[in-house]
Length: 340
Ligand SMILES: Nc1ncnc2c1ncn2[C@@H]1O[C@H](COP(=O)(O)OP(=O)(O)OP(=O)(O)O)[C@@H](O)[C@H]1O
Image 1: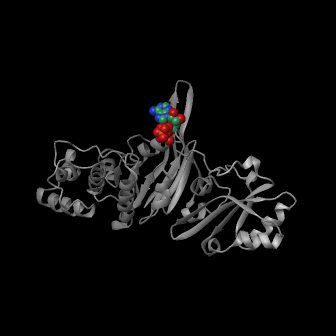
Image 2: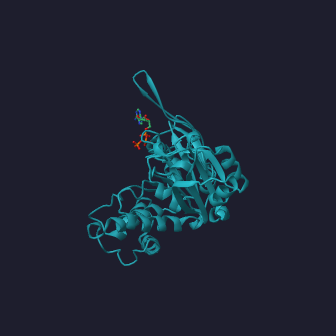
Image 3: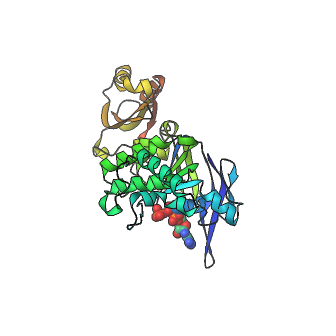
């Protein structure tokens, strides 16, 4: 488990003060995957540097399974750092070393004997699906395989936390899914907590149990994936379940309403029911249906014709267990806010 409390990182540019991290707090329990997304400049890289203590936070604490990284010095800090395994966009392998030697490198650094190293490397290569590739060299592997090597190397020192910084940004969609499946399968391995920094909503939807939105150095929204998407007006909900404009909504006659139904409600004809209840045709002008963490989320945008009171429509939808709001009341109705 990793616990971050009130983390600040202040940079000084001449007389200007930049709060790259402005009081970040978060907890990632063992056995879970937490995603952090945010605009460019939100503070993601600073957070990664501070979590790994490559850059010292100005204040605040980082604890991993009760061990405080922020107060540790020299040897104790070096040891504490091994509690975090790092996976980057590119695996940055040593080209002149075999795959096995790349994975064993962190163990070599801390003086683990050859026999134990070979045993561990074998186990890790098996775990990432590269049991037969130990003797190969990086140049002989595909990008996805190299990333698997990077993951095996990150796990070599038996970390408590796996910190993945844009782990699939350099991969094609199919390889991305294979790597995500691998990362997802690692949650709970000896109590591992996984933290993924990403700008890809697909990553969040595929493997994260919980997610935080970082903006201006602060976490402005956070929660379990299935909870944040339920908040129809939330930025994360709009980003994860957003409805791209399918029609020119300015020519729609009437008022637009967004409807979010979850779980079993998502399988019911709530719009059809409301349509007959209010006695007006309700045209669906956009929608997205997602299955996240075993739950179905249906987000529809409907046009309520002029002459029909939209509040009656909203009330009818609410009475059926759906959430419904005027689209014009939503912060980002197009769901196209760039969180990268
Ligand atoms: N060494 C530094 N000195 C001064 N300001 C910095 C420094 N590093 C980062 N910043 C500032 O801190 C803020 C957060 O930057 P950071 O690189 O962490 O954002 P990011 O979310 O990783 O962005 P990107 O996705 O573009 O890499 C930005 O305003 C940036 O200009």
